[in-house]
Length: 170
Image (cartoon, rainbow, N blue to C red; front, side, top):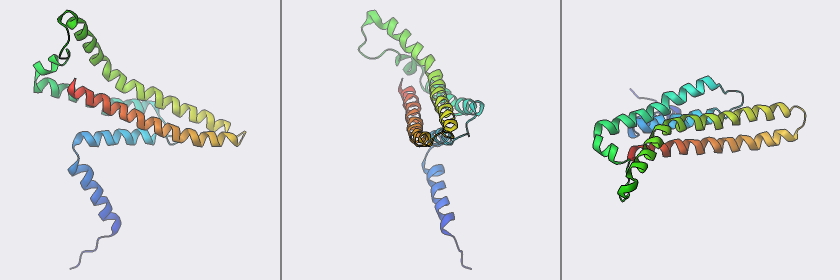
């Protein structure tokens, strides 16, 4: 018996092999986050409630899982990373306090920064879209704004990845 496989199913099988076998769970979550950021660039598909829930569900939970993995792996190494090597003894307390505050604020920055900037971009696109009914010039600006907002979404995805990667070591 001859097995017939079409090209589309083999492409889907190849991509699923890359995403689910070769990449780890952390990479899949980060790819889903960039997918969310890019999907909210589509006009009139924005819901702030769903967006904040998805940010908390994926980004905040990723931060918390990294936090617990560092705590359970080596507690002494985790707390020693709050004081960088070479810090003078007389300012160690202040540096430790600053690093602790930075670590506590980090999950809030991970959630609020993309939420505020991507939300404002969506509301701005809606405002420009409503102006485009009166003048054709606004359509050109809306087209430029779309690509600018895609760039902003990619930048915020990079910021989220950088903060999460920084949380692994610090």
